[in-house]
Length: 291
Image (cartoon, rainbow, N blue to C red; front, side, top):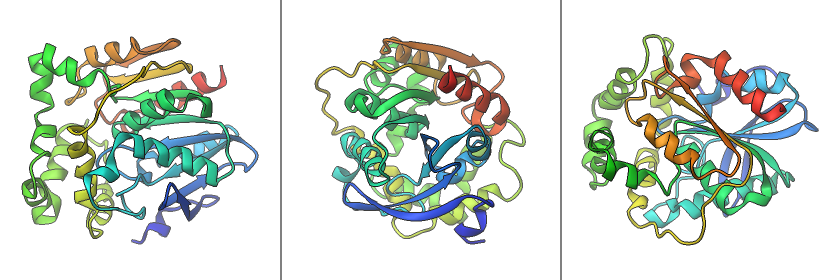
């Protein structure tokens, strides 16, 4: 199945030049609707939001869903500097500029949520409202891992990803069997419908993409913090209470970075809450954006 065959009726797919690279973008909803950008996490791609795109479009939003740089059909530059958090945030702002969108609502899950935090921190004048799904604020994750040994253990995979070539060999062998196992083992039964992981694998197999995806983690060790990263825009954090990777105290610490924020923990959801409880998650997103 090609990428275009995953595009539902009424959705469009195109390449957009932004921040010096080509980004693949799927769009839905009225062209004059309030812009809403959805950012996927690791190791998904735009299709992560397949259960939210149409309901959000039906609610009147202009839904904009890119493949992050390095993923699927977006360009995958080489080198860790290309995956610096400031660069990733500039991609989002550059995409909005290319689409003639001066301000937008922003929703992010996992790595998309980390990028969304940084867009709101560094480019607040572009963001109307923010929704974060299971993603730590960049300035709290390390400290929380140091304070809580169980969180450090849950984050051990991120340390493994720092190694050169070995993660590609371990997770990429046998049709990405290791990555499939990690995803299925951390999700509720049925979260990934039949054939879903095969679709993900098609994106992972594109040349250079899996290394680019891992470079998000590898670039973190070179990140330099500086200036305030407080979040001034209205923010809602949604968190799976059964997240295998991130404990709830990370969510509470991230909330502490927000001037106007609220946190809702979905006790029966895992890290993949947007796939497991799509109606509930979509409703909570809309409640925040429309309030």
